[in-house]
Length: 121
Image (cartoon, rainbow, N blue to C red; front, side, top):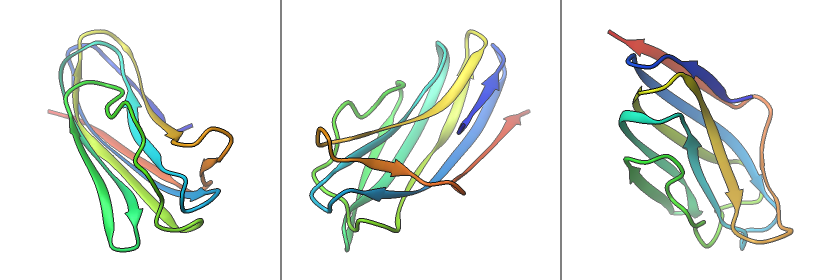
């Protein structure tokens, strides 16, 4: 449910803030977004790696990063932030996307996570 509709040629700012759990601290994750084709896309993602460090990514294409980081700081109470700007060249949906770095070891986005977006004039 963390997604919003966009119209071709309009520019939008977006921010997803996600509370998530990891099955184990040895389970890494990746946080990104899907989008329709664009003429402009710039965003960053930040999420836990250890208790004292985060993973940071800057991207200009949807689906980046393609691989997960190596760990999660905690099994509960992790936070991921994905934010940026998009000008789509086709109508569609911007949707949060995430994955576990370990097969059969879950990363779960928790209810109460939020999304903000606005059209930039």
